[in-house]
Length: 489
Image 1: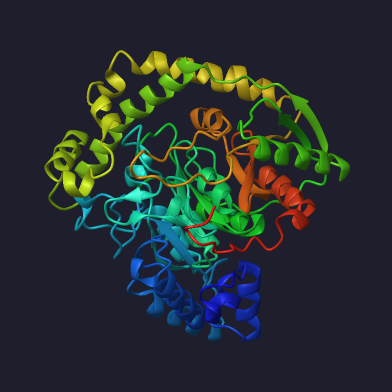
Image 2 (image 1 turned 135 degrees about the horizontal axis):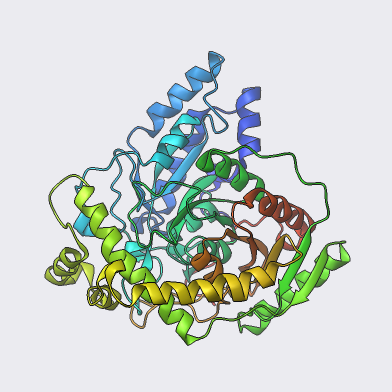
């Protein structure tokens, strides 16, 4: 199927290097690029468009003005930083001056937002904040039956590859916006899977950095021990550029030594075609000269899943309360206030599923409760000492299956995936970096590969990911969505 907005297609899928090169040779300006992307978003994102991706939460009123400033600065020989004049979209649970920052909840509408430190870093690097992206409400921590990609403020995000399929969660809007050609770069956040899931199912690249590497100040929280904002893009190189800015680090000289890789062959999706694609990809990489060792890596048991939920919910009570008390404006000041607000506005906030995880969190006493510390210690023992440290021994990265093809969104029954490996869980608990890289397709839908590295080893992780991306270039092609009808498949 042809691109549904042909006039913007060529510019919509430019990479950052292409954009900066076109700026330098005078064939493109920041303002013309922003105008093209805004035209595309207005044509394809709203429900009235006939496509209705609902990936965008809000557009920045000053995007065109800032673009003009960046053009004027460039003409005067001024270059603010590595992203001078490049548009970026930011997930709507991250505060940006002039944008909602609601985390998808009507409870935060009208509460003033200020630039989070990560947004300040983007502006200092010369980036243009184009707008904010829709997400799974409250970053998908509300309910065991929530539908990924749905929020009360933005509705349900569609997947550009097949519109009735999930765009993943919780950074669903960021993943879909990249695949749809709305932006070259986006920022997501992850507590467990919320960057790498939408990256995988939308056929883009996403990196969850080591926890603490990117500031979470000004980000609506879930869990301080697991929350991490991170870069998303259509190529590893673009993600590396954005990571450079978000982490305030510079890319080192690439490590010339051969990559040493462990394949966690037992971390499967339990989707035959997806697991087969991963296995054949590993074989292809071996044939291309990659040093890959198969290894059984510890799996989480039922206790580990329950412990992770206990930790996240206990930290949510504390961390969300502290955040809400510090955010200006009247309204909810605690998780209990949020629950009361949602009960009072159930038609808007709870039309499809409830907030059973919130209710469960309120039975805990935060970090001071008796359940928290034992759960955290058990989780770290499994994630670090049983899974990650022995799993990565003697290697640079662990690779594995991550998610199957995008599942159908279902607001009636619920939308959590059952076709996923445990690849996001151990690095989420341990705070280690993890990313997803496109490797091919199953039934026309993208499939990603998980890559995990040691804490603060993001640059080695990105270097290896780029080597793998280059080796698999023929598998993934141009990675442009086919915009399949929502009534097919």
